[in-house]
Length: 408
Ligand code: NIG
Ligand code: FE
Image (cartoon, rainbow, N blue to C red; front, side):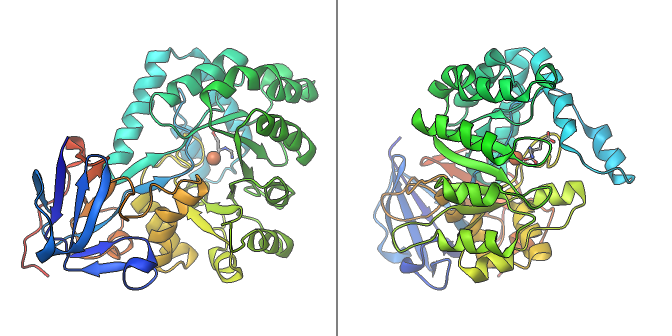
């Protein structure tokens, strides 16, 4: 593989404030050298060491690859009619998940894998170099296990979400389903999962049921995350903090106690339970956006992710999520970019991604723009020019127009 010099960078975003200016640790006139899969050198362009290959960033902005810490990419079927009906006035209900469960169970491994692979490629072309993928549309022991097995061929960040909803065949005996999800199903899935998640919400699983499943998962060595407070206020966020979960995801309807619990979970030694905000879901369900300012101002750790799934948020685009966070949730451009890179890495408890520092993975995105601000300033426009993953240029990611040296 050898070494790669990324040269002629207009603005380098390290996402590590100790390395440069402002909260994003930006550098001008910098270059970066990757040796194999790792960042080996960052410094002034004129002092860059020789490398086997050179990538001309065309004076574009270079930033860490996005870390999408929440997605549901293993599914069959199509729910565009449900989306259209919603836009015509119908409300979202979690019951739509059952449609996808039926289609997923009916789909072959090849069909599920091909769909998921194409979504991962779609995300990569938009700058996502790490993606978490959940199960949750199988909801039987063999279907959950095969969905996680397929997810594991695409990412190491796999999450067991057997407790997404109670499937129809258990509708009249939900406690038996909780026992299955905390027992036989967990046993079958744990070998393929790094994380466990539960949809803790009215109409899905209550706090006691979620605690049963998550503590069983923790005993098996899985890290914890939760779908919490998406459709209304409830116990999810506080349960996530109580269990020391890595993240509480959605956080759309929060009480003052929820905000305080998330903020108080942060300490000098720990980022606490990360509040992962998923504004693609509010966009696509036409709901109120989470109050990001309240969380940030209270001192909670915030991440942004796509929640890519066929029901509530069928987007794989982290740039779109950044634009929503800035426009609709009043995050600054710096806060949004940080939450989509270092924030996502923290939500996955990863130190090697989400920041460009010597020793980190050489996962980076070159924009066809002089600044990261353009991610929000030019919504819907393909701003990603090149994506480097593990020190390798990803050919399929070469999109956007080459930018002239002198244009800014
Ligand atoms: O994160 N809320 C739970 N799960 C998904 C939606 C699933 C669906 O509607 O298919 C979410 O938004
Ligand atoms: Fe989700």
